[in-house]
Image 1 (spheres, rainbow, N blue to C red):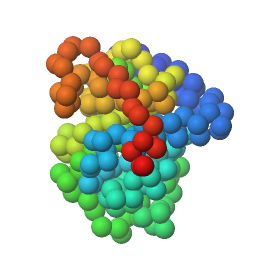
Image 2 (cartoon, helix red, strand yellow):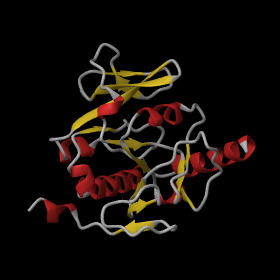
Image 3 (cartoon, rainbow, N blue to C red):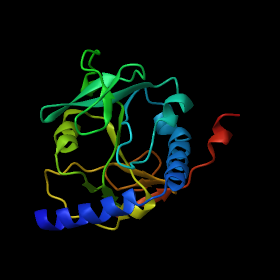
Length: 209
């Protein structure tokens, strides 16, 4: 399975990193608009997001779209993720290359998170996730009761990915086309079915009138 994951990781990383900047901007904004119009996120208090790295979808517009939310970001410390409040003036660059919160910022208890917006190399429609292989989110997500929302491009959404019991699964997947319930847990108003369902979202402007 490790060899299969490695091959898929290389495949989806190549697809993502070949996206032109304009496509990345358009897809990122589409994802942000869907999320900003989602009543579940709009009703959340504390949400952990991420800062885009290596052509990941950029969620930073959400910080201004939903300013009432207490946004948080992860910081790598050894083999674990530590959560800090988002402060755009207190970001540092990790040796891996991505921006993260400064270590001296206050920490956020994972138990207080309502939702985690999870990056990944690829996701599948059942909530499976393929990361870079470090296991940071697989170790972190079981420590919080937060709803797990995977963030991905449509080209990095697979029908099925190889997963083990230790791989953290998502409750929802957000793509430029909308939100997909993975069948993990029962969302309000949804029928209990084995197959994933796609939720059609109204434009954000309808919620902001």
